[in-house]
Length: 88
Image 1 (cartoon, rainbow, N blue to C red):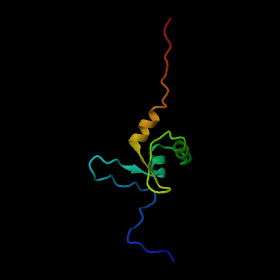
Image 2: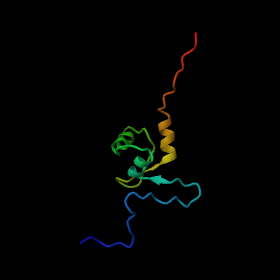
Image 3: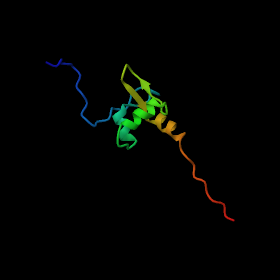
Image 4: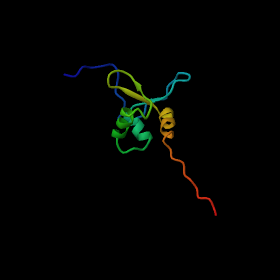
């Protein structure tokens, strides 16, 4: 029989409430980050973590959390700038 807890689980697809502390970032899990970045799968996030392309917080053995602002900044390093042609 499953153990009862006094905490209820959040509804599927719901996003965590913003943090109440001053200067503390809103942390997202992989699924929330996937939705925020409009990705089709969390596997690309796993690959970015494995390659250390994005910053993350490890909260325990398997729990990873991400700051959306920091991830966007990290991914910005990989932006390729367009090069325009010079008129002759």
